Image (tube, rainbow over all chains, first blue to last red; front, side, top):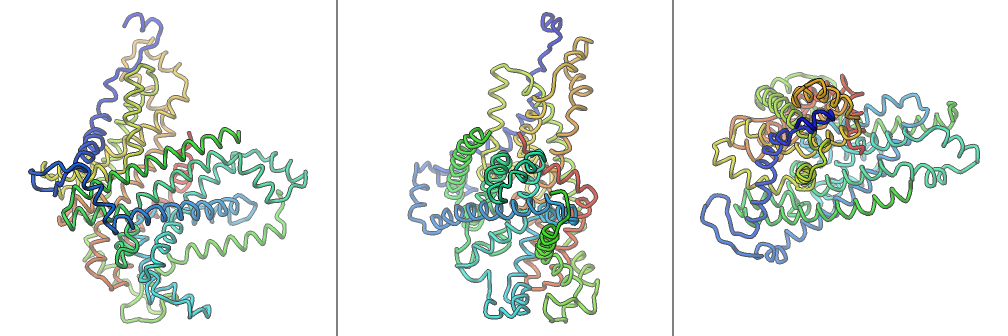
Length: 296
Length: 273
């Protein structure tokens, strides 16, 4: 101790990590480990007597059309949200990163939905997209009455309506991250390109896009992982319906555990969800990290 | 490109139109919340004879007063705890290169990948066995643990980029590690604490899945579950429901408008490595 003191370098003690570590272990680590164990049992959530059944829960999933469909919906929603939300977010960022007079007002307005409770915005949209809702009224007002329909009641459309609501709410999030990236690009670079007479599209693709790589990385990670875990919006908009047309892994986990009492099976679904998140984040991190390095 | 040209004006018009499209749902929300249930005209037409009756009805029926108090309590206490324990843990994790330090950091970072769905069912059983179901304190405990990985990640990243000269000077002067943390490290962490505060508070305030599990069937509610329960009860009474939604949004938007600069910066900068 005295030797370290003399050098003036006292390493902070390990026990500073204890409070955080204990909370983390109690809430996340131990229950997650127990969850992985329960996934191999027929536990019903109540009965202390349960049997170890090996891989049967996982095997059952392959015979469960609802589960397979939910995995497909989850991936489809995640990819659709990622592509559309980031596309819209980027265009909005380019729009408010200009000389327009309303740029500050628009930034505050477009970001506002991000802080609002998702379950609340989803209930709002459930009404807007209903048969007598504002969306149909608007279509009528614009003479597009033939387009009017029950947007959430159609199994083919409902999934896209979930995507629409998430995109409406979180494009502002992508926008502010892109905007921070755009504003870190020095003005001279734009001006040099403009003087060289490079076209706008070329300018974006060859100059701005590589410099935006860190913002793109963050945005893709955030939106795809958020999309994979999506629960609140589906619960409030459709409850997974009509039928099972919009069930995701998360809504199925909830239903199987709390309405069917199949905790073991439900946790096996959560393990699958964990595996998807882990694979996607590892893969995405590897690819984007390489691109980011190649770009810099 | 620094001049306001015709193209800038065209862009301005397009962006304002986009802004109107984004704001349209909020217009309908307010428009229907102040409308009498007997008024069945189109939802997009401005309400002609507005009423505040929906608000008093929703406030009374949805138990929003108690839910707001619970949400404020849960958010304040759990965010305070998670900031305190994460900042304290980040100090040795960022400064020590010992094997235990790197190991502990990786273990905590594992929590960034684990979706809460995995832990929430076994934890539900533990909370039930402890007799904490239906208590807001179960939520405080839950968020305090759940948000540790992300918050620690922010603090460690920020602290690693800071020089350690001030800490070294303090310890040469004989300060204990805790005194150094409290009076030297913590003040330097102020910018990232702002970011962590914003992101954690929004995450905790808006969470729906956890209180849905832990509080359902009890008279203790947070705002999201109170709203969901209210919608379930008044299925198609949309004027009343919209009034309840609006009441639940107003406090959030008020804080947002008051602190918009720091909140947007928190979201924009929080995840930069």
